Every structure is written in structure tokens, then in C-alpha cells.
Amino acid sequence: MKILVTGAAGFIGFHTARALLERGDSVVGFDVVNDYYDVALKESRLALLEAKAGQVGGSYEFVRADLADETAVRETFAAHKFDRVIHLAAQAGVRYSLVNPGAYVQSNLVGFTHILEACRHHEVPHLTYASTSSVYGGNTTMPFSEHHGVDHPLQFYAATKRANELMAHSYSHLFALPTTGLRFFTVYGPWGRPDMALFLFTRNILAGKPIPVFNHGNHTRDFTYVDDIVEGVIRASDQIAAPDPSFDAAHPDPSRSNAPFRIFNIGNSAPVTLSVYIDALEDALGKKAIRELLPMQPGDVPDTFADTTALQRAVGYRPATPVAEGVSRFVAWYLEHYDEAVSA
Image (tube, rainbow, N blue to C red):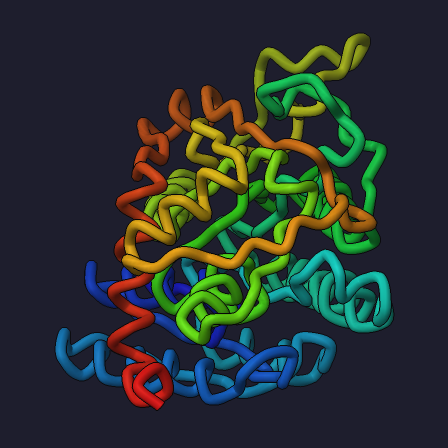
């Protein structure tokens, strides 16, 4: 198939594009490559995609543009006939949304509108897009289920991603555009984002600096290894969303629709405390952390825990990489990739 992957220079987008190339798909990557975090890391990911395409003999093209640029999006769709669109580009980060909400409006709302419009007008068979576990916000019923209401976001980032789900449903209903939203749960692994805890902790531990441990390390997260996320993304994309015949308009279930629309959690379904996560990192590095215990940050949720029953029923897959194994793989990548910096 020919597949558009937005956010191809990003963490999950890079891994997804690479996996698609490895299985023989033609891939068009789309990314503005902004400076929200280290541009050199993004360029290294893009170079690897070019190399991978050469190794497997696959068709790969990269468009360096902003999703908020409607003309660039329109021209990309006009130049290609996409069998699938996997939309992973977004302004990420919970804390950053507290200080620069405008970036989230442009990327997550304006950019997503342009993707929806392009998919509609070019009759794309299936749009799969990234949402987030953050949409569960103030919910405390565990595990988080797609059947739960998600109308109490705790950060603007989560509000924009919930808006994406609602926007997608309107296009599925109005224009019969099949859409699948995927709520990711705390993704980590090689080539991860430098603003994420695992990256920050690793860098500080190796440098002998303290690491900030919010909520005294007591909150739990459903840490999900990136390869597991990618497997779920591709399987969900392959299977085109269809109307749910069991949808009851008199008693609407948030996870169902009479439009070709669906939402899945993708999480490890095995939450651990932040302290245990740090323990795994210390074991992988062979070095103890200096833990600076701090209160909960604004916008954080105490716990996350994914119910992945719907994903498993639909596509026959659920993430299962243990945290210790996933953290060890990240550390091995980090030590190799930043060898000179670490040595210095």
C-alpha cells in the first residue's frame, strides 16, 4: 500500500514509517521538523528512514512542511493516491501546553482539520490517528476503558486530542470517512523524545545529577514499549473502521458509533509506579539515581491503566513487553547513540 505517515521525524512516526517500509509498503513521510526538541535527533531518524528505504528497495518520499499549511497538505494529497493515512504528527507534551497553548491549536486542531479535509476530498479508505490516555483526565475508575466518558481533561493538550476524536467522528458521520483513534499510554523506547522522563532520567543519572521524582514516585503509569505501539497502529490501520451494528442511539456508548468510527486504547495493561520504573533504569545502567522527591506537577494524573480488550478483540493483538526489558533496550540504544557525549 501507499501510506502517508505524518510526524515521520517524531518518535512514534519514525518507528511506524520504518516498520511499514520493512514490510514492503510505500511510505510518504510528512513533518515540519520543528525545534520543540533536539532537531539533530529528528534529522537522524529521517536519515535512518532514507537508509532503510534503500536497504529494502522500498518507495519513500519525505515532505518537509507544516500541517497548518493547508496548501502543503493539499498538494501532498494531490500528488499521491494514499491507501491509508496514519496521522501521528502533533504538538506533544503536557507541561508545554501550560505555557504555549497556541502551538497546540495550530498543530493539533488546525493541522488535524487539514488532514480530515484532505482525506475526505481524496476519498482515503482509512484514517488512523493518535490520541492519548490523557483524555481520561479526572477519571479514577481503573482500568481506563473506551466505554468511559472522557469529558474532564486536566490539560489543554488532552483537550485538543479529545477534540480530534470528536472532529473525526463528525467526518465519519457526515462523509462516511472511516477513522480510528488510538489512545496511547506513556510510550517509551529507543529514539524516544528528550523531554520524556526516561530520556531525562538517563541523562541525569549518567551525569551524576539528581532526577526530579514527582509525586514522590508514587503515581503509576501504563508504560508501553514503542514496538508494541507500532504493531497496534499498523494492525488497526490495516483493518478499516466500519459502523457498529450494536450502537444504540437511545443509550449511546462513547466507544461505539453508527458511523465508520472507533477508538482503541493501546497500553501495556500492566501499570507500575514511577519508583519501580526508575529501579528498572538503575538496573539497566548499573548506576543509582539521586532522587529529588517532589509533589505532583500541575496537570498530571495520579494513575493510568489501559483496558485493551477492544483492541485485542478487533485486531488480535495487545502490547506485552515488560518494563524491565523495554527500559534495557532503551538504555542500550542511548549508550550507543550518545557514546561520545556520555564519554565526555
